[in-house]
Amino acid sequence: MRHGIDGQRFESRLDAMVRAGRVSEDEATRLRAADPVGRAEMIQQIQLRHAAARLDEEVRAGRATSGEAGDVLDRLSKGESPRILGRLLRKHR
Image (cartoon, rainbow, N blue to C red; front, top):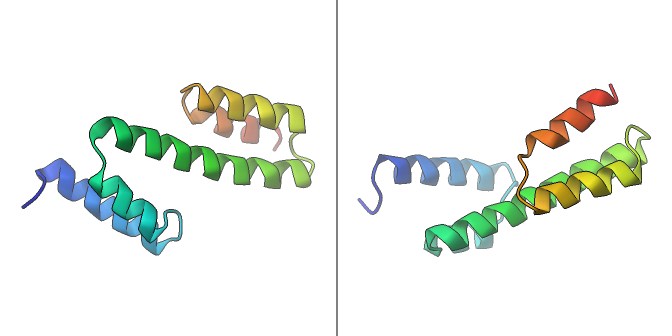
C-alpha cells in the first residue's frame, strides 16, 4: 500500500474526478507523483480552471458581470476559499 487511509481516499476521489471529466488522466498522473506543495499548487490551478469556466457561463447568461467574475477569479488565485464563487452565484439567483 503506497499511501495510508488518507492516500486511499485521495486516490478514490481522484479516480472519480477523472471518470467525471473534471481532471484529465495526465493531471491525475502528475497529481499522484507530486510532493504535497506541488500537489496543492496543481489543485489550485484545476480549481481556478473550473471556476473560470463556471464564471464564463454565468457572465454569458447575464447572471454575473465580467467585473464580478474577474474579482472572484483574482481572489481565488490569491488563495481565498472557493466559497466566494458560491456566494456570487447565490447573489444572482
